[in-house]
Image (tube, rainbow, N blue to C red):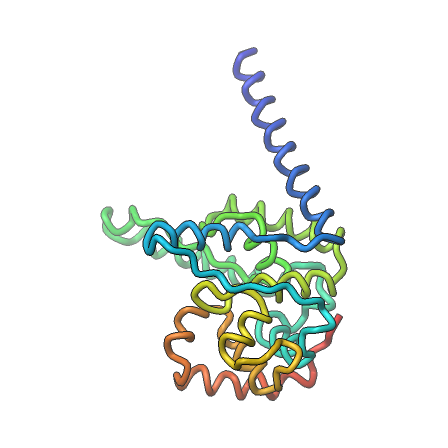
Length: 241
């Protein structure tokens, strides 16, 4: 029993140390831009493993040097309540929970071989949650990883301003194969700086975010064009930090 309690204590201590490490890194980000994210490093390793070469475009630019239309477009497309929520969109979480429950139920009714496949866990992720995941976590979708994402989301919201969260997000999010951040995306797709993006260009970039590699290969897809027009119409009401 003593050995078991000692083992549990060590596990809890290791877990606490990990949380303090994460929180310390987030606190530093209030004044120091992260050089890379966990997601970017994962992409880099995959490129080296499959291509034996590294394709990486990224250039950090201050918040003021990112065109306002891009900020509005990303908020309108990804998280229209960004300025007002505490990091989590609880309505979206409830819907995602119900969807996951239905998926689990369907999985339990599948044949044994099919049921052995893991159920994909989905969540109504805000910009802050996406940043928490990309900065420090793996890409797996499990309830444990989602719980860790929640802890990091709360840390981001308490230690950084909304403006800083959006600045880091726009400078680190993936916008194509080896394309990270607003400046790299603006140069890659429009041959101009992020400061000079027009509203239609910004809307187009915002719509790419859920599946940037797919839309990089299908720049004229009907969905991309139609959704861009929808986001363009919503940008005027998007609230900026």
